[in-house]
Amino acid sequence: MPIQQTNELQNNSQDTGVTQRKEQSGSKTSSKQGQKSAIQAKQTPIQAKQKPVQAKQTPIQRNESKGVVQRNGGDDLKERMSSQYKVDLSGYKEHPNSSFPASVGADATIQGNNIHYGPGKFTEQNRKHEFGHAIDNAKNGTPKGDKVINGKNIDTTREKAAEKIENTPVQKTVDPVQMKSSQGGLSSLLPIQRITTQDRQIRDKANVGVEVELRNITVTRTDRKWNKKAGLEFLTTGGVDGQFVTDQHQGKSAIIEWASGHPPFSQTNKGKDQQDQVDKIVEIVNSKTTGKLTELVAALQPHLDIGNVKNAHTDVKYKRNNASETQTQVNVEIPFENIGRIPGGNQKSKDVANLFTGSASKNARDVFVKSRKAARRLASQMLITWNGNNVHQYGNTAKNSIASLLTLFLHAEVNGATGGGKDAQGVLFKTGAGDLTRLALNADGKVVLWYCIHRNDNFIDALVDKARSVYKEVYKGRGGKRAIQSLESRVRAQAEASFKVGPHDVEKDIRWEDEHTNGGYTDTVDEDWYEQDNTYMREDEVDDTRKYKWADTRYLSGVKTGKTFGTSTHSSNDNTRSEKYLIAEVRRNDNEINKLVKMTGISQQQRNKLHKKIRSLQTPIR
Image 1 (tube, rainbow, N blue to C red):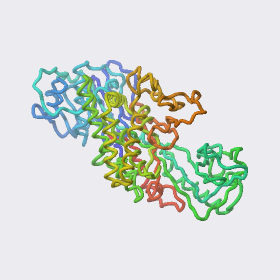
Image 2 (image 1 turned 60 degrees about the vertical axis):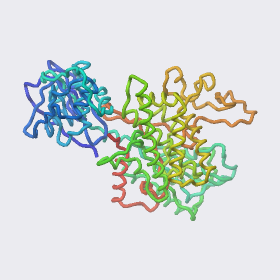
Image 3 (image 1 turned 90 degrees about the vertical axis):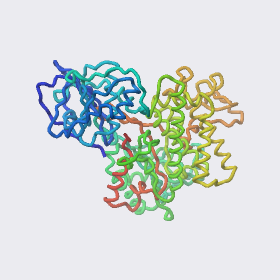
Image 4 (image 1 turned 30 degrees about the horizontal axis):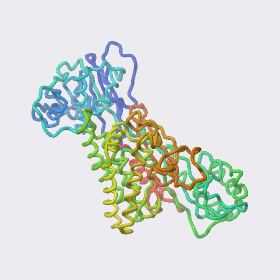
């Protein structure tokens, strides 16, 4: 759960410096700086730990401060970072359990050569961040500041530089080199930099929805058969609570699916609203077991806003099917970059693997966990390849993003090889790998992935090898050699379609538009391209008279839904940090999350437990 902090207003006429920090929601801010130097500030989203603050002000030390950690010469982290960045950090003094950070709503602050950490915040990650500020200031000068908070001058312009250093792996050895002196000594002239948590605000903007297959209701039309080619047909016009649709039909009969809206998580009332609405559907159908669809929708209108029956379906009839009940699929938005990370300690509740519960999803969970492990290894190999051949170096920011992408790719392909369709995945991640490359992969990850995938075919070969290995481990070679060969062929084709762009004169700008010009994946994609004669052309250019196996690019993503699902971006209240989210559809009825909405309902105690679980799953890992 996120840490809540309150600001303590501290008045001291001698505070005249700049504080660099991540601003916390609720802090008193002003654009008037007067004669004071600024504090650099920035907020961090949902995380249980906050990051440090750097300031041009002399930090106020209270009696709660438990002492000073000199760490001169004997501090391994400080020495390694000094050597790695060629900046002398030996003069910095660290004060754990200090009350000063709370005065600017922070976990830690750096002012001059004094670094203050709040209680429980003396962590390696926080230290790396604050040393990052010191290194950045030594190389680029001290910032002036752009805000005033609680009378302290704050600067929010330099957080990205510190974060980059924080997220870069630290070298293992210390090299004897000439180092640039960092800006210690004149502590009253240096800024305070700080980081605070805002993850709760991001999480509460993420969405929860339900898809309820009303298998207890059969709808029948008399005018014609359902159009199989149309796939999903919309039965109602839609409203605040979603709409009735159907994509499961045979002949003239079909099953209704209620697709709810996706309200912000904080507005879902822990699933109670959807449960009440499902109960009302069942109650009304039980009271009148047959009739016209228009009559059913009209009876539901006081309880369920799904619009009116569309004109094409006004003659459709419904009937209560006593042999079946509802099947619920809860849709939960989760942070994209949580997928490829393996959290430990008090962050374990955020593990995306926790989405998988129930015996029906055991194999799917095993595939996910093993795919993630394989994806992280492959992402590490990509970083080694990039960093070994390029001056600009990338670290964990790129690794975690690539690992999330490759985890989803492997999970979808390995489970798909069983022939079990979407249910085999246990949890269906509804944005595929191809579109995630464009929509969710962070900038560092895009550069590394582009470089490695287009450098040679070794990484696609590695994906094939890892998919084969995971399949054999979990499914014990089910289907024999033929199944393995089919998987290998599918993974190779999907990887090339999702991650790789062919020669410009063959595939032109098909999947990723102008990355040939930019040398990286861009943010736009045109879905109206089809494959014909081993090349791609627009839909209106395709020769319909010839029998070709065309490939709509929506099918190249790895999700096997044939539908396009984008990602959402949710930001903290102060807009200093944002997260990419994608929809995870919980497929199996025995998954505890799907118990959030079921015919018989659940106790409030169970619902509260699931509410807490979903909150954790929607909280970014830091």
